[in-house]
Length: 226
Ligand SMILES: C[S@@+](CC[C@H](N)C(=O)[O-])C[C@H]1O[C@@H](n2cnc3c(N)ncnc32)[C@H](O)[C@@H]1O
Image (cartoon, rainbow, N blue to C red; front, side, top):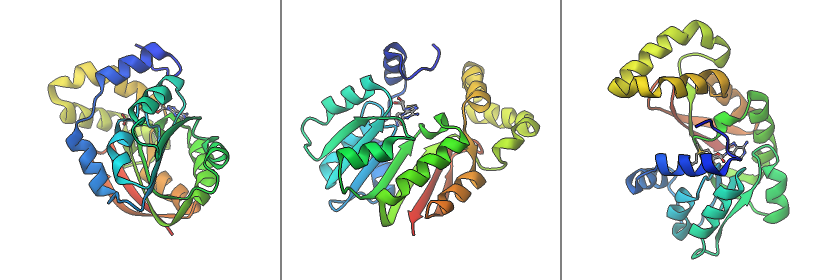
């Protein structure tokens, strides 16, 4: 099915096909050292699974998602937690939506998984510049997504053969089944290089403190607000 987050059918297909275990969420909570003083922002919160895991542990939590269906599913999950909510917005405009809806809020932790590759690089720049003032000094931001750890996005064509070899090795028998979607994501969506992320995060007042690659084409990075 073609990826379109404004198509509820696709959203339901994604949510039922890609589920995350509680162990994995526990790993993210630990990595972010989530605690009762935290105000957490989840960019691309989907149906709110991570927010639901974090909500009982934090002072406040907000999710952003462009899909009205995802936001309503997240709100349902968060009913028991008045300190947690989800807002419908695209990433580029979400800083002004947050300023309006959560006046004065400052985040101490940020999380975004499998979501920011939907933005072009100029859009990532715009989003980071707009959001950075909403993060407190010392705040920690974890981004996990399609990230090229060995080259920058503009060099994807000359690295494509090697990338495909690495994918085949990484996915083993499942590779043929995944090939079409991955190639589509590499070429038609906007996963980007770790150098780009580092430069843009620096420009927005963050310092990348740790890289957490799971492969040469997918993984995480931890950035700290200076
Ligand atoms: C692949 S899902 C990941 C959901 C969740 N973070 C997870 O790890 O399961 C990507 C999410 O990002 C949202 N999204 C995609 N493009 C967006 C945009 N431009 N602005 C805000 N949300 C967006 C989608 O609606 C979707 O819920």
